[in-house]
Image (cartoon, rainbow, N blue to C red; front, side, top):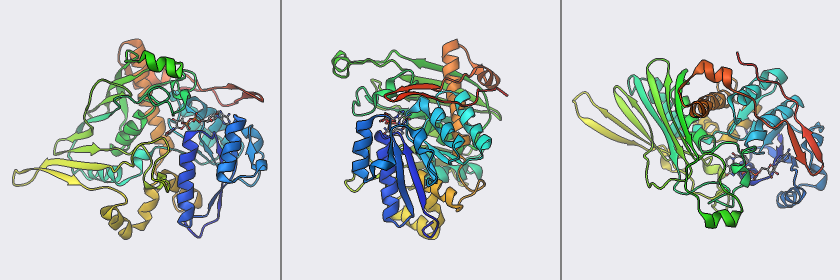
Length: 429
Ligand SMILES: NC(=O)c1ccc[n+]([C@@H]2O[C@H](COP(=O)([O-])OP(=O)(O)OC[C@H]3O[C@@H](n4cnc5c(N)ncnc54)[C@H](O)[C@@H]3O)[C@@H](O)[C@H]2O)c1
């Protein structure tokens, strides 16, 4: 909200995604929103220095040890941009130090760690949000409303899919962090990377159905290229293919398919099938919407701005089957008209603006999208796929809760010594 108190932001982890946070912050500042980055932390001194110079931060506001930064009393919220298996570690430390926290996806690399982070909100009395760009746009909003209003009738099947022909971050996309492929830091493959955008979106649209059981399969039998192995000096030790079939209470099943590199051109899109209609989701947003586009037009990490769309299939009262394209792009005329009539929806179109609006009080616990809960349930389902794949049989929701383990990093070696992360143990309910 433009007349609200200024939000003073600190960022931890100054790799690729931190620049996307900065693009959004810059674009919001240009629109007049009172937000400002006042401090940043990064364990790599060279990266820290270069980042400070790029964004004009004083040396005194740059920290190699984020724990020193958290001693300040002029910070309003902290954005956690470290890699996957450090999310629970760093985000709980942020909240324990007394700050609201906005953390990158995936929420964690196991359900146990997602639950620890979720519970930290109450434990430390702090606000938390998790980056899930796919749920902040008209495609998701319209689909969710159609499902809730019964436009599709009883839903019995959904499909959550994503794939790349060759797109392993850190391998055939070498400009991405090698940590994506590190079994201790990135931990998992595409299911926990791009897959979380598709799964979270589907669960949210479907009204967070309760999982009964899941059968999953993960594979490491992907293709690699010896020339690339040599070039980037690494192979790909995390999974590639993640497949699952989930069963939810109330007679709903969902199949899951996520791949980073497959010899196949097209595997279709996510969709929802109901007794009275079907909904196809095209170009699910995994890049964060129009405010992630900098002045030069190239989104950090590459890729084009996605314009999510929907197609509605059904049969009308005259028995005529229809296939209606629903234009849900943001930024074109249709999107602008929607925002003209409902300007308040703008804060539902951008992850970061949604978070800042929650801090300003424009959104409440009731009106905000509860990303920590959605992300935790996504981790629950993803973990079901992993456990089932390891066991070679389906697993029930109770088994996932009982078998999940905390694997988040509790000790991290850095150039200035070991950081010990002191966060709660996982206690299955
Ligand atoms: N790169 C993308 O396009 C992208 C997109 C969406 C989400 N993400 C998510 O963002 C996270 C980060 O991804 P990335 O690509 O920016 O990775 P990255 O490796 O480029 O950046 C992470 C940074 O965190 C730093 N770091 C590690 N431990 C630290 C600590 N204790 N204190 C301060 N800094 C520390 C690392 O040195 C590194 O510079 C990942 O979880 C990823 O899933 C990335």
